[in-house]
Length: 500
Ligand code: ADP
Ligand code: MG
Image 1 (tube, rainbow, N blue to C red):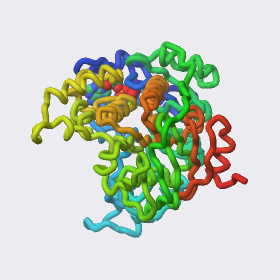
Image 2 (cartoon, protein in one colour):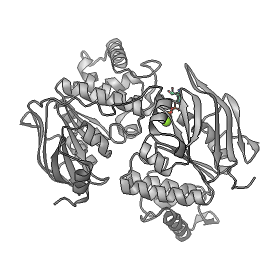
Image 3 (cartoon, helix red, strand yellow):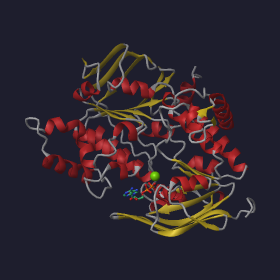
Image 4 (cartoon, helix red, strand yellow):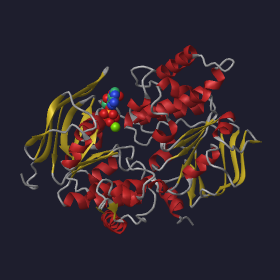
């Protein structure tokens, strides 16, 4: 089979997969053509990741077949998939943090003679692979010293180095700035021009229109249709995904803010925060906009006591509390929904119940003995209340979808009575329906008098949900805008340092 002519290079036929209590995939057909960017669209839990995990050999399937170049193939391990030229970038990056960029790209393919790795060759090959993706980093840098965006580019470089023919990207842009997204798209255009097929999972409609060729919509484990992206409207796609129209993406209920809750005075940190002063009042959502690397996550970590401050003060209710540890921050009523919730926010191996209980265990314990029964009952209340989609509170959070995991983190802070929540990209990697639910929860929190400091790289979200907006740039506050007067242009100008 040749690479042109629009024939399918890869066919997944009638794929089914059940997990205990859930049919994740029910007879799904999925055809991929060489050189296309095929978007997989669907709400959280629709089965997108499962379908791609079957393709990449991470999961087995219950029924169905996979055909590559017209030949049925057996993919029963990630190794099988790799040999067949199928590379997958998961939502959670799979690089080895302690290794260098070059070591990661060439992992398992290191140039060596008599068992001794040729470091010069290693570096040179890596440098070429990095050039292919247009990433300018030192191949000798340790991967854990890179930001998420850079790590992602390293993953693409790694897949290209392995001569992938099918490249699966699960939410590749959720951590990227507009400029980095364009760079990633350039890379995608380059690889598809050479015949590589890309499966692209994302909820960002505007991006899909820009980069996608065709789209397959999954709903509740079924494929509900495949369309050329040029032929179908966003409204139609959203209807297919959700079976209901999501009209109001930003259901912010603005209200008069109450007393001052959080005050930062000239806060600095060596991690990249310079002289930041800001306030959040009760009932208020304050947006923190800026480009990736503007220092927003760094600021969040200092406010939460996860990183030390080097100057300035943090006050809650007018009283200095400048936290030295997260424990200090939690005691002062501050909660954090971290950017990288899989790594920092949730203990993946633990159950929903244990995750919700984490910061408040101390409160429920009597004489140091945690009451399992009360913890369980409380967790069940939150699961019902927040409509957390899980078979039971005993389910391990690693098995839940992104939106559901985010709700578990929220439940944890609600259970702990946090008064101020710092939310770092709260809806990243979350589908439209779950996004609206998270926004509703934010409304509920602020209605109850909590304050929210929301970091977001999505301008419509910042503008749609915030009452006030601070824009950060190079670790400093560049502008403060009232949300009603703010426009995408004004926020961007400040973020880019172009504001007059
Ligand atoms: P999507 O990627 O579209 O959000 P997933 O493929 O992750 O959806 O999930 C589809 C369904 O399968 C969900 O109901 C999810 O909870 C379930 N599921 C996924 N992986 C597992 C697993 N390892 N164990 C149990 N259930 C799972
Ligand atoms: Mg998924």
